[in-house]
Image 1 (tube, helix red, strand yellow):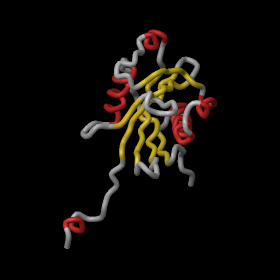
Image 2: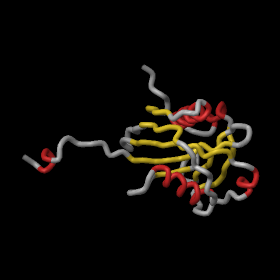
Image 3: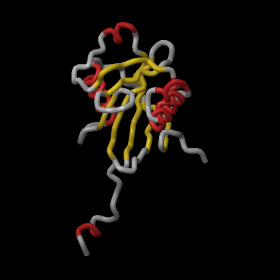
Image 4: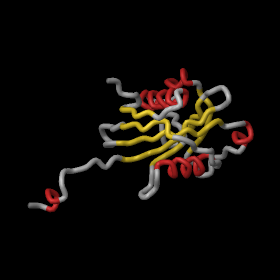
Length: 159
């Protein structure tokens, strides 16, 4: 018997990331343009060892935007494996509404971002990749329905 067989069957070890759905008064979503990606994203990033997804979300937004939004409840947990990257669990939290005062305080202290803007849900496909647009729309629906959602590849599974 080998050490691997004594330990039991293999278990998943997904990469974990967390971000926030932050909106303006019109309900548009805050997107950021990372300097290292070819598409826009929501603010957030990968969870570090020993860190909770919510704590990672707060840390990443503070590092990226120079402000700490009020992160509330969980909107979406998305199981979203990618062929060359393996299994991923992606969390989206409710980041509330960003008012004029907070917008005026946005900076890019860590240099990872080049730009930010608010985008209507119907326009997400112009800014980001399809799987992320699906996930963001699922988060918008979850927020509007006042409930958390489990998703796979960005959408809530049906029966």
